[in-house]
Length: 344
Image (cartoon, rainbow, N blue to C red; front, side, top):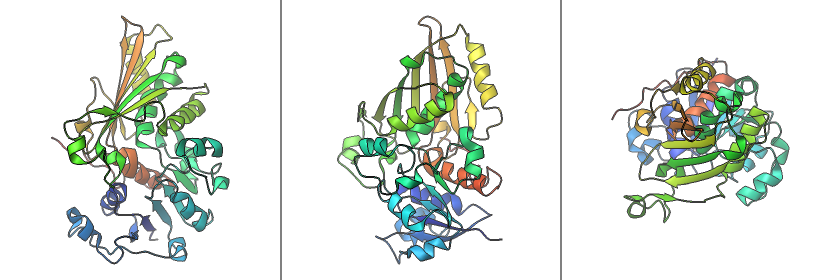
């Protein structure tokens, strides 16, 4: 049986990354890639790196055509995805949404942080948060998967084992994340314009980044404790990659070896999380679906420092979306996303 798959919004960074990955997936037929702006052109005309690999034409299909697919990836902006999900409905193709429109369960929280009305709140309760390491069983049966944000992926995977073991004073969690400019999307802005971003390093949206409630909600749900975090994102002059550093007071008298053992145990069977013995770096995960984590206890200050590194376009977006599809369709979870990281 052929699985018909479509990417709605295939020409942005996330959409083209999905195209790159799904072209290598041998259990699906990538039968639809869409773009309103470039309809009629080949995707390889828009993204020359796909020349001879995927020369498929971009289309601007009707909703009825989209409904004929088995799986739909929505690589659309926040606020646009919810309209598509509402039109497609929850009784047709299985949907993996890469926007933030269905990551939060509370309509009011969404509207507060995203500063727009939610047009399909009825789907919020049924949407499954697509972080396989924590919600694999729910993802398998989901009709609508909310693919996690890039910052939340790196933060949650860094924190989950320590919270699971009750190692942390949860009132003291501070998250410092640094991302490459592709995290801001393909549309240029004053901040991401090359002369502005190159040789610069800046914090932004301090205390008000919309990934904050996503991080807090998922960690609270998973740990059973009320979690609040101080989250500060930074922009660094890289194309790809996120390095997250989490600081928290240690609640227990554990040593470095016990902390590392807890992380190895928690992620022992996870195909895409690597527990490192030294601090990770973004180049070691570039182009791959891996998340590298490293926990360390600082005895002098009785603090725990947790580090993680991901490629924001792969494990932070398109790769994780394909990982979710594999789980939903009962494929080998690594199918199509077992790329070895690029080096250098």
